[in-house]
Image: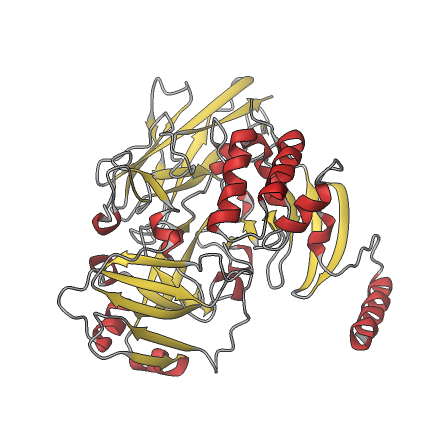
Amino acid sequence: MKAARRRAAVLLTSLALAGASALLWGAGAEESVQLKDAPGRDLTTGRCIICHSLEYIQSNAPAMNRAAWQKTILKMKDRFGAPITDEEAKQILDYLDSSYSGKS
Amino acid sequence: MVTRRELLLGTAGGWLLERAWAGEAAGSAPDTLTALTGKKPLIRRSFRPPNFETPLAELAAPFTRNDAFFVRYHLAVIPQVDPAAWRLQIAGASAQHPLTLSLKELRSGFEHVSVAAVNQCAGNRRGLFTPRVPGVQWGNGAMGNALWRGVRLRDVLQRAGVAPGALEVVFDGADTPVLPATPDFLKSLPIERALDENTLIALEMNGQPLPHWNGAPARLIVPGWVATYWVKHLTSIRIEPQAFDGFWMKTAYRVPTGAFPGSRFTSQESAETTPVTELMVNSLITSHVSGARLPRGERAELAGKAWDSGAGIEGVEVSADHGQSWREATLQRDLGRFAWREFRFPLDTSKAGPLGMSVRARSRDGAKQPDKLTPNPSGYHDNIVQTVSLEVA
């Protein structure tokens, strides 16, 4: 922890010296990818990021509707072993369908 | 043009330089370029597991640079393999003398051979499908051409002794799922393909050791077949007398039976679906994108690449009238039948106005690029004729 902080300080210093115009430093670059703010976002984020970053949800939106999200959630739960209860699956489906269903 | 932000981001994996571009979009959002450690900025489809696409400009060279070559993973736990500690196990019910090889033994114990071959994701161009289909929304760059060097898989299998009745060979790599319940990424090949002299265990790519993100220290090379079979970070090879029933064979990477030409993988085939196998004849314009403006009267040339599953490219035709008439492009140097072949065609810039240029490759086996997409649920094998809309002004 201490070493990590020291390393961060060194990096920040060297970046400042390098004249980086904008800087964002966190535990992981993928944290820059966030889902739309709506009821169910935190549950959806929490379950999905166990295995993958969130671009999968954003980029697939144009190919998805409620039935396709339902199929995907079941695949993650039943085939990939995602720890999602039936009640959570329903909340995640409502969130994804209302925020990321782009297919007519 | 940097349009949104330019950030330096730190991760456990190293430093990432990120730029958001209003790029040649596959999807609806602008493409974002992000550099993985050891790679140039590539089109980011996902951070984790890492899926990064080669930008079009990098596909113009005869061989795709190692640091620009696309990256594709299904599972997020990707160890940095220590070459000294790495071992390759060759076993299975149809292996007569199972063995384990160190990298040194693999390198020194077998003849070294090279093959130039296109490595293309089965889902390349999925993001261009109409109607849209779910999956990683790749544009044109989930592919590249490289000179692969290593040992023949056949020689390694024969050292282990292939028993009569061997049906499939099953491959596993060092990458693993986050959750133990997620199916590990294992793939199988028909025994005939595994014993084909062109199927290699590659240790080098374009004269350099394999990059980490492309399968170090050893990966499978299956020229002519889609990249899903080119298992990275190889750790285990099993010769088996029965069909492998893992998720990534029985459920994923399948197309409707009979929908596409090419090799059949009969031990994995059902009445409804069959594994995606060989590449379809295809081409890509690398010199221009739609919307490009050409100065009137100035010399200009259309250029790109054409490839197939290994019969070799017989010709590339170009049409300036939406397919009513076709003329032959000039083919450039032949890099080998599994590699892509560059084509060139002079553009007529004498008249101002729109210029639509279509390209259609044909294989020595008689196959031609089609006009219409063959729908399939996973969005594989998009090899339809490509048209770029240019403007002479």
